[in-house]
Length: 76
Image (cartoon, rainbow, N blue to C red; front, side, top):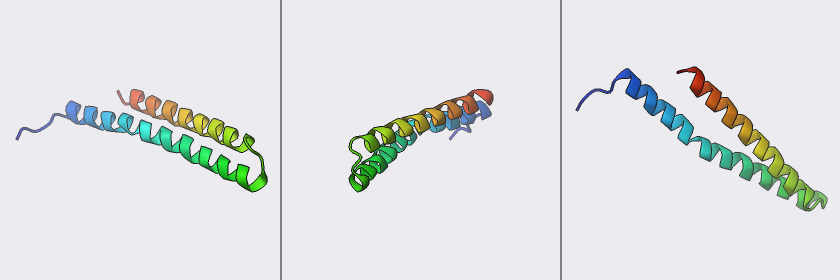
């Protein structure tokens, strides 16, 4: 079995980090939307809580996306 070069190892780490962004974004949006739905049910805010949760989740996901991309691009 051949040894991977340092560049190949870095490329694999970068690919793994970027591929996890989909999961991160889905969790941010899904969890915040769910919490908004719970707020709707508890305080009769429908659909304000769900919409606000979705918007906040999307903003958090976008922030994480930009942060991770800038982190990956600064290491090159």
